[in-house]
Every structure is written in structure tokens, then in C-alpha cells.
Image 1 (cartoon, rainbow, N blue to C red):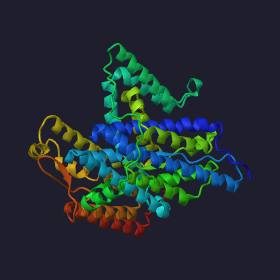
Image 2: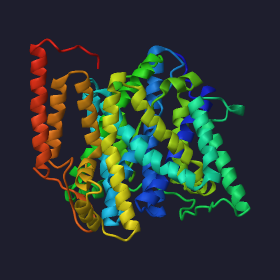
Image 3: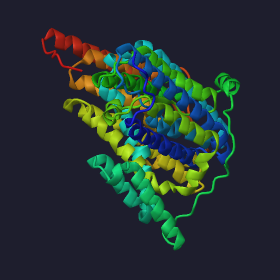
Image 4: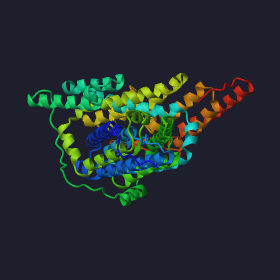
Length: 521
């Protein structure tokens, strides 16, 4: 048996790519929690990040161990561990659709934190269970239905907000943003093989501090109250289950379910790409660890799931092996557990990293249209609409807060003036990710003349509208609330049931008249 090579030359390149990716995401989630969810610094640095570090470390070590076992099984020494880290799409979904609304309603960051813990826990449980049924889910769900909700989040809550911020600080943010687009869009190599993302951040940082020195450009260093020290994770199991027992967590499932399904199917696809590249891992343990990592995170204070990353073949092409995965987990843990993140956050201005967020947004949106059949582009466009509605509602709510006007007053006036169909806007925005998924699936089946499939998805919509998970809402002078319970949105339930019947009748008619076509999913 060959001796295991724990670290090879290619691991340096692999480590730089994976570490920079995880580090930038940590910087982003610190900004998101502080800006949109009201988290104080001490909560981020002593509760969230230590828990996150343990989940990242556990996953990196597991996938390194799995790679070692594959080496021993095959007798090869060129096996590449699966890349693993923070789940980017889920970070934005949980912040903007779960934690931020809870904070806006309660003005209590701890309630937002517990909501995030539950979302992370539930996501992990669903992904763990998905290891047993993931292949069935992948075959039963049109790809466009998985990608459209992500594209909707990407073009609205990610791209729009952050490009506004980029253009608010043009001297600091625009040049790094364009460099990011060049690095990742054109895929060119920079001098000394420096990663494009790192180069852009370094240039943005230099611009910010240079302009700050000359008192020009509008940059003010961000001081965080965290400091160097030892910050061990806080065990949150009791508080989490108390929250589950006492809160109306059911409304969050409209966000958690579609994200979990996407993660399950995406992980299967990532494992397939690894097999194509030559590393055929045992699927079930890899998938189970995906869920376990997120459960660990929720039990230790982190609100964000972790996942197998896309792009294993790229890391393999770099020559990475096992060591890059182990080193990434250790370095991220040390930074989070000993307060090193606070130093980086002081040195690196958020404006220098906004281009990466913009890239993530436009890439996620573009992938939706690139990775589907051409005929399903109609379905992708249809699936964007609920997320656009949710974003429009957020703008209305934020404007009301800024103008010191109650949201209830605005809704009442809009119902009278009808300048905006506010009831339709709010109804469509409730459970937006799940509605997006349903819309895209239905349209895909309609385009393919698979009306029986469309009928089943309309039945799914009827179930979710019956329970109030989608479309149902109530409002008062201060907030718009989900309205869970049976028959809270009866008109939508009736319509979806009727459409399910109509789709089934169309299927029978086409079958009778020999108009059915066999198409590939």
C-alpha cells in the first residue's frame, strides 16, 4: 500500500482558492448580520463564527478522510478531496427571507438568531434525509424549478442591492468590481498566479486606505468591538428546541424546503462531476455529512449551513489532494476561534468585496438560463416573478420605515388609489421561493406538453396555500405577517385545485388524440 501523501504541491493552489472563497463569505455574512439583522458585534464573533468554524472544520476533515479511504481503496495517489464550505445561496436566502423579516418584526436580534438557527437545523435535517431520496427528487423535479428561485434571489436581493452600494462608492468599489468580472468572467491569469478575487480585494483595500489618507473618497474604517481572544462555541441545543416548541417556525419552511431541495440535488451533481473527473466517492456518506455539518452548525450557534462546493474538477486540475481541505478547515477555525476575523474586517473595507457579491448574483442568475433546455427559458423567466415581488415589497417596507410612516397606512392607501395592486404583490411575495419553484416547474411541464406533471405541481401549490405557507398574510399598522393555518388563502387553494383538474383533463385529451410528445427532462 502506498504511503498517504497528506500535502502535495497542488494543495497550495487549492488552499488559496478554497480559503479565499470561505474567508470572503465570512466577511460578507458578518456584514449581512450586522446591517440587515441587527446583530451586535459580540454576538457575531462569540456566537455565530465559532459555531461556523466547527462545522467547516468537521466537513473539511471528513471529506479529507473520505479522500484518504478512496486512495487506499484504489491504490491511487492523485485523489482530490471534495471542496466544502459555507453555502453561499443559502446565506442570502436565510438572511433576506427569514432572519431580516423576524428582526424587522420583533426588533430583537436574538429572535432573528434563533430563527436562523432553526433554518440551519431544518436545512441540515432535510439534507440528511435527502441522502436517501435525493436521486428521486432530482428525477422528479425539472432543473429549472431548482434554479429559478436562486436566480430570483440573485437578480434582486444580491445583485441589485450590492450594485447600488458599488455605485454609492465609485472611487473605491467600481474598479475592484470590474476586476472581479474580468478575473471570473474572462478567466485570465494574473501575474504571479495571484487569484483574481484576492487581487481585486487588495486593490480595493489600497484604494480605500490611500483615499482615506488624503481624506477623500468617503471611506471610514469600520471598527468592530471584537478583539483577539479565545471564543469557543456556545452549545445552543436547548435554546433551539425551546424556540421550535414556542415559535411559528412553519412559515420558514417556504424558504427552507426549496433551498434544501436545491442543495440536495446540487450535491448529487457535484458528486457526479467528481466521478467524471476520476474520483468516485460513496454517495450516501458524503450526502449525509452535508446535512450533519449544518446540524452541527445550528447546535453550536451558527445560522448558516455548509455544503459540498461545485467545481471539484477545477481543484483536481490544480493538482490538489487531501491537504488543502484539512488546511482550510484549520485556518478558518483559528481565525474564527481566536478573533482574527476582526483584524481582517478592519483592514479590508466591505466596498472592496462588493464586486464578489455582484459576481455571485449575476452568475447565479446566468446559470439558471445556461443550465436548462432552451425551451425552458420561459419557465425560468416565469419563476423570477415571485422574487421580484418579494423585493418590491421589501423596498416599500424600507421606504415606510425611512419615512416614519406605518406600513399599514401605506397598504390601506394603496388599496384605495390602486396605483399598485398591493394585495397581489403581497400575496405573490409570501413564500416567494416556493412559489417560484412551483411556477417554474408548472411552466416547464406546460411547454413540454406534460400536463400530468403540471397537474401534480398545482396540487402541491394547493397544499401549501391551504396551510398558509404560500400566499396567506395578515397586516397591521406595523408589520406584514405570515398567516399560517388552514384555509388562510382559500381563493388560491380553489384556483390551484381547479388548475390541477384542468391539467389532468388536458393530459387525457392529448393522450386520446395522440398529441403527446416524448421529451427529455
